Structures are given as structure tokens and as C-alpha cells.
Length: 233
Image (cartoon, rainbow, N blue to C red; front, side, top):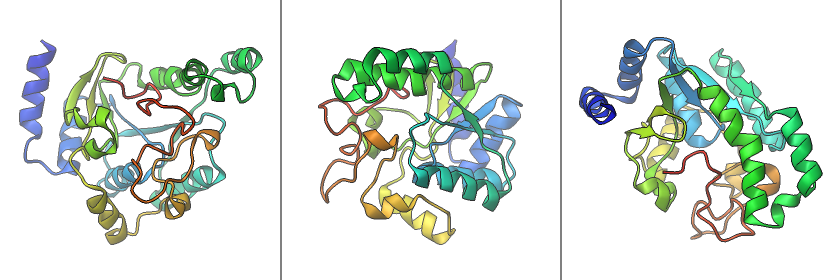
């Protein structure tokens, strides 16, 4: 059933522009299309398209409580620029208190298990609340960002969150994305100009050197797939 639905929807979306595809999904699933933004460059492109075409897509972000100041500033600038509201979802207070009590304020540096526990409390659980009751989850994922993401489809079923995921920028290159941002004067995080390609929580993100993998700056102290659990296939 899911495979047939995905196949039918994929056929409907073929050859449509990003704005047309999102409009089609909003028509088919009224009030149940959401977009998660981390305020990264890809997400800023999608936000601009949603705002420009006045699409009825609900936009939210995950505020982990440990983001860069520049990210919060960009959130404010984005809302002001596009006259939109981006709904924040926060981690459960009790869960954060227990996490810090158990592993310490920076215990995520000590082991992959601790880091994944922190990501779950601050990101994965709030995401599940944000997606609950919706049918389509729009993301800014691009295939060239990581090996894990290279195997994704533009429209796919997310088993972990029981929702259809639409990745409209999946086949965009970095150069295409940067050109679009420049052409449309889209606001972006100034940390990108300082070597930060993928920006997450401040303690877990560093700038990368030329030639390094785009995800090398995330959880830089460990050897892993560089994912937090939001987009695991």
C-alpha cells in the first residue's frame, strides 16, 4: 500500500518545480505538510520558496538549547525578512535534567552512546512531537552531503517517524545551492563563510578544512556516520 502510494505520488511530482511539487502535496494533504528547518543553507532555500509562493506549509525548528548565537540571530532575521513564524520545539525539561545529571553537561564527548543519548533528548524526541499527526515531512537534505544521504529518494517513507519524507533539493549540488542563495539574496548563517558547512549545536560543530568531507565538522571527536538519528535509513 505504502509502495503504491509513494509510486503514485512520485509520478505526480515528476517534472514539477519545487514550488509546484510542494503546492501539490499541500493540496493532497491539506494542513498536514510540515517543513523542518535547522536554518542551514539548504533549509533557507526551501524557506524562501515557501514564503515566496505563500505555500500553506507549517515550518518548525528544533531548539536544542545549545545552538550558536548566529543561528538564533538568523532565525529572527528569517522571520522578519519573510514575514513568517517558525515554530520552535524544545527538548523535554525533565529529560534534559536527567541527561545532564547522568552524563554531565558535556558528557557527549565521552562516548558515542552518550552523544546519541544527547541527540535523542535534544533532537529526536522533539522531532517526533513536531511530526506527529502530519502526513508529509519536507527536508533540505542533499545526496552529496553524506554516504547515508546518497541512497535516499526525493519522496520516501520514513519508517522511524511513520511519515512520508519529501527531499526536494536531493539532487542539487553545493554550487547550485550557493548560486540560488546569491541570486535571491537569501539570508544565511555567517558561520558558513568561516568554514562551517554543516551547522548544529555549538559544542558539536567545528569548521572544516578545504577538501574535508562536508560532515567532518559534526561530532568531530568520533568516527561515525555523522548522523544524529533524524535521518537514518
